[in-house]
Image 1 (cartoon, one colour):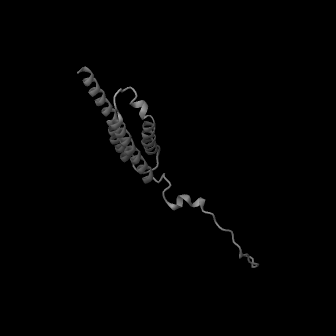
Image 2: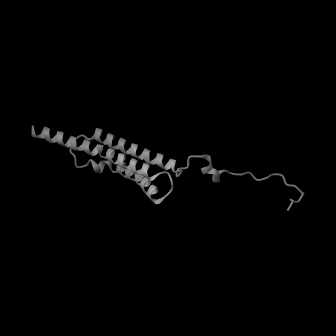
Image 3: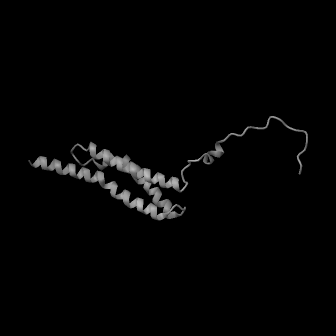
Length: 126
C-alpha cells in the first residue's frame, strides 16, 4: 500500500511538472501583449525569452523528469505540447513585429538579376 501511494504521489508530481509551462504561457502572453508591436528592447527581450525558454525546456525534458521513478510518458507529452504552444505564441509575436522573414520582399537579395544581352551605340542622356 505504501508503494502504491508513493507511485501515485510521484505521478502527481510528474503531472505538476508537466503543467508548469501553462502558468508561464499565460504570464508571457500577457507580457507580450503589454509590450506592443513596436521594436524596443523590452518587446524584443520578452519575445526572445518566449522562444528560447521553450526550446531549452524541450531539449532538457529527460533531465526534468529524471528523478521520478515512474512512467512519465504522458507527462512528457503534455510538457512538450505546452512548450510547443508557448513557442508558437512567441513565433506569432515575432511575426507580428516583422522580425521573421515571411514576405517575398525579405528574400529580395536572393533574386538573381539577368545581365543585358543587347547593347546600344546611342550614348545615354546626361
